[in-house]
Structure formats: structure tokens, C-alpha cells
Image (tube, rainbow, N blue to C red):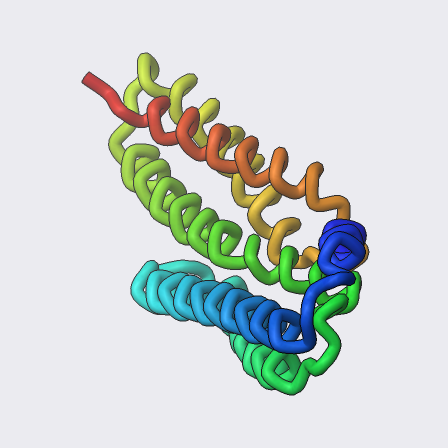
Length: 186
């Protein structure tokens, strides 16, 4: 991102101070709007976790992560509003941390989904017969895999490999879908 901003600024060198200020203000608007969107997404995920009967330890961990991320994003918005240099509104570490935070809602909601699937599996286990036993075991394996992936995604930082994290997120949802399909008995 920094490289793109630098290249753009080289092309705009001949522009006026007025145009630099206008671009700076639009950049600020963009970053603040994006931060607000991430904040809204985190608040939605927090509500889903609150209403999604999950393990209390997982709920606490998610709540703590979301709360600290919301505070960080509020500080980031303040920082962006104070920026006076058009070439770099954010440092690379800030971009990376923001990316890690953007993955929190998916991870939190994935934990809610796997908790609901686990509840279904446990309810089926009580009344299961031999034919469905294998499907229940497969569902449990896939659901456990999905939960492990989502728990790992909750612990991303600015040092994480985000391409791998995005692939893991998709894999986690794939595992949850497989688990859910295994418990759809006809």
C-alpha cells in the first residue's frame, strides 16, 4: 500500500497545494469510513457471539479481542484525522494489524457456528442408531477441525501471514459446512 501511495504522489508532484490538501482530506475520509465499517462489523460479531450459546471461555476471549480491537480502531481514526502528510496516512504495521482485526468477525462467527453444530451433534448422539453413527463421527471430526481453525484466526497479529489466514478462514467454513451436511439425516 505504501508503494502505491508513493507512486501516486510522484505522479502528482506538479499539482498545487490545494489539490494535495483535497487528496489528503479524501484519503482521511476513506480511512475513517473504512474504520467505521470495521467497527460496525466487530459490533455485529460481538452481538452474534453474545446470543450464540458458546463456551464461556471462548466467549470471554472473543469479547476481549473485539473490545481491544474497537479501542484500537477508535485511536486509529483519531490518528488518521491528525495526519498532515498525504504520502503516508498509516504505517505498514498499522495496515497489518487492521487486516488482522478485519478477520476477527469471521473467526468469532465461525466459533458460533461450530458451537451450534456441536450442539446438534450432541443431541443426535443421544438418540443415534448404528447407521448414523459414522456420519456423526465424521461430523464431529470436521466440526472440531473448523473450530480449531477459527480459534487460530482469533490470534492473528500484524506478523501473521494473511494469505494463509484467508485460506484458513475459507477452509474453516468448508469444514463447518461438511460437518453440518453430515448431520442432515433424511
